[in-house]
Image 1 (cartoon, rainbow, N blue to C red):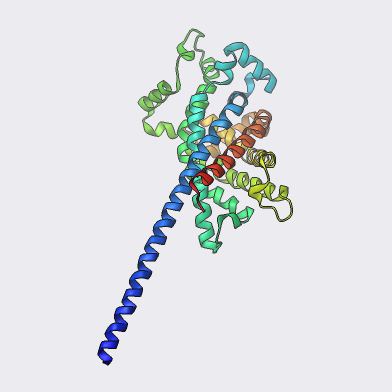
Image 2: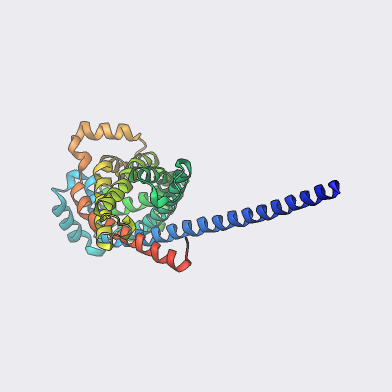
Length: 334
């Protein structure tokens, strides 16, 4: 009898262990699918936000790149704006590089926000925080810092093509090419093929180190500024996800403004390296700019950038947050 009962008890224990294991496997599979859906939603929402950002901010982004790269050609933002329209027209001039800009921003923001969501989960797991919504603003800022590394890898090639197209006329004027050249006919794909043919794939990653140096600290302040502003704008006992689209736009504008104030010198250096195809290290380029043009040249184009970033990043975040919310509701992810 004792042996029989022992066998039966062992079978019972084994049986319950088997059920527990099955439940754990099912729960793990459910969590894996949930995380996959959440990552895909972040990816799509970031893409939509990136498209909105480009169409709102592209004209002033073009002015910024021209002023950063060729400061001696223009007396200021208005002069650069008028000369660009007079010479190349509104569409060809102000919206030069729009296709690679869309590709760049879709690539950057889809990867950025997907990586941001992933980094939030990693940080919450490491710190023992049950939900990513409960992370502090500083913890979210660190998630943005690490996410920016991954987005830099996708951004660098498309940003390089965009900047070259935006400043193509100035480059050709500098090397004394006649106005009858094919500069208005060259497009992003032809320019990409030309770079790959002359420099190989590595040519598309010219300026990668300066891009990473710009992006990682920049997005620490970008997401940090955004989250802190959302907290400040939330009413007592109100969740920062429920502050409404107007306050979300204000928070996005603050995040974008803080980002550019912090990273602008690094962005000037990146633009010079990419547009002029420099092989010099970023630190040496910065020293040359300060020595030859003065420290103020590291802030050429800041005014159009700040004017642009307020509506552009406000648009980015409101599209991101609300498309993400609607997709979560549609797919019912808890």
